[in-house]
Image 1 (cartoon, rainbow, N blue to C red):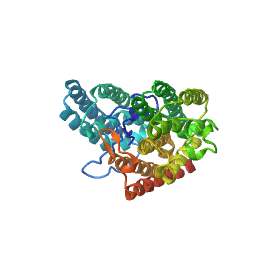
Image 2: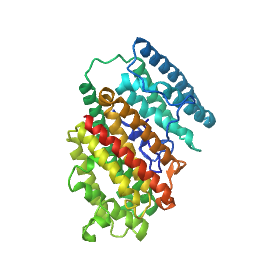
Image 3: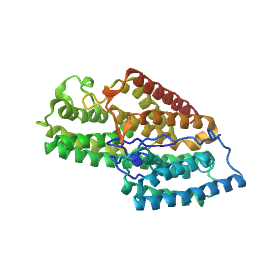
Image 4: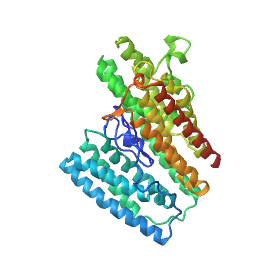
Length: 399
């Protein structure tokens, strides 16, 4: 179940969740990558596309979820933290009880509900609740539930549904690229103003957007290294540009002297990336291959701590990589439903396990720094990332 990762920078959280549109911006504590909890009875079995009776069951479950969400909205309005947390868990339990049937029969509507239900459930994991963000998200969840309640069984072919889902993913990528360009401008402004503490905060926020769409960014030749190269990736330090160049200035040199030119170049490069993404035509196999390669890279090299060598915010990047890859998975659900529903179930469970692991290293929506992890913890994260990569590889084979 798609749960965005929250981080100080968080996440994009609901933003990262989108396939047909995006909502919250990073930095919202309650948009965490909290894992979903299975009902007390155990794991829900994969359900076949429902008959009339099955559809009725979906409608009944949706009506119950709408009612519980209304209670949640009332609790948010009253800023009742205890009730918000209780209801966020209850909403999750209701959704878990019938979501597999929704995923099989209404894959596009499933994605809409999933992306808004997730940050609501995540709110239960934090001491501090962002009532403003939850107000918006709960409204969007109600709208998605209304759409599901009125949905008719589609007569479209799997390929048509897949095309619609890919178009939704493209809209998500476009929006993330827009937010990356805007976030980079904010980050660059702090750098040029010499405000180190503010620049550090904006650095982490903007990085989430880039890491979420990195499978796409990597397809644009030298733009990726210009934006994201580490010192070890370049032959001459004077040729080094991008986020990590300024990262070193912030966390290692503790000085922003001479960084204006790199800030300006970063704005230019992210705007060019934004422009090229707008004209990009996506194909399901390309999307999945990019996600698979990214997860594999995360499991073998990023997990070593090489990505954020100075800030040590590597878990923020890994969480964004996982979120971005899961969005790809959600986009190909129509094909999985037709050709290998069991693989879809495996992917869902593995993403949940990954999110559960990452959640252990969050406190109030922020990830611990990489240097706080033990070798055993790093190994566990690496193994789970590798399993996800293998499963995405299998999904690529059916497209």
